Amino acid sequence: MSGNVRPESMKRITTEELAKEFIEEQVTAIKEQVGDKKVLLALSGGVDSSVVAALLIRAIGKQLTCVHVNHGLLRKGEPEQVISVFRGEMDANLVYVDAVDRFLDKLAGVTDPEQKRKIIGKEFIDVFAEEAKKLDGIEFLAQGTIYPDILESDGVKAHHNVGGLPEDLNFELVEPVKLLYKDEVRVVGKALGLPDNMVYRQPFPGPGLGVRCVGAITRDRLESLREADAIVREEIGKLDETPWQYFAVIPDMQSTGIKDGKRYMGWAVVIRAINTVDAVTAESVVLPWETLRTIRDRVIAEVPGVNRVLWDMSDKPVSTIEWE
Image (cartoon, rainbow, N blue to C red; front, side):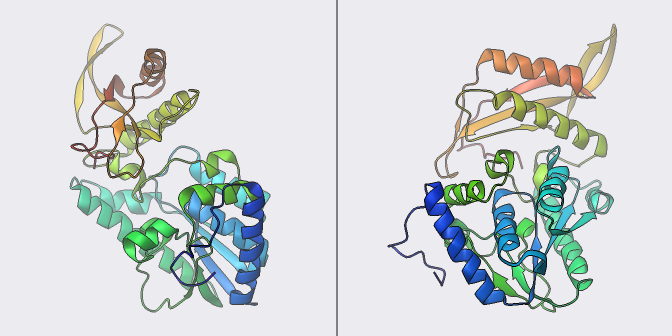
């Protein structure tokens, strides 16, 4: 398979058998393209980049170097899982970059959502480029581009899978899943042995929790959001049928609460759960009261600084899926 047009004859990858055939084809294609040269990959921990990493590890092993940039805006446990799966289980060449302070210092006091996105995107590219320049002999850049990216944006992924690198980093691209849809990438990921909570990870914006910590990001509010989001995803994930996407948001506002007989100011956590077919429109999901009550009790008991739990029941349009 070549080019950026999906052949009409290409089978939909819906079974493990078809996924294994695809893996064999791509392992051969990667070996032919790369030869004995070295490849660099920005590994976010999302399904696309994780599947690409697993494919390249199978094809070329230590010729691949993965760079995982922790910008402090990832969900709870994600950096640890990337290290555990790829360095611990797959023995990958993994460069872990702790850039939390660097990103959060740049974001301090910034309230405009678009400015936040631009800062996060630019800083990611800068950090990745700095790491790339430390490595010798890199000639290829692997990306988790999938077919909808090509249809929507000419194959350039958002910053978390690296787009817009400086011109002096002139790498040839390796994009083994560029003709697959997201559901097919997940089937391939399962066949490659990636864990379910990585393969079926929910869609996550490039700026991460940066657009769910509404307004100026503070470290304490960000950490409370990370903990609340983990509770929301854990409890809704227990349902027999889960929504397409569900997460927590912390608005930049406080309200009065009472604890130990004293009034204090605390944050609100908002539960967002939606179903969608194409992400152009989306409907709020009616969650069971027992689930909402469990989330409420756990968030207020376990998350510092939070004294209210709200439910966002708005549809798209007029509301967007993300708050920023």
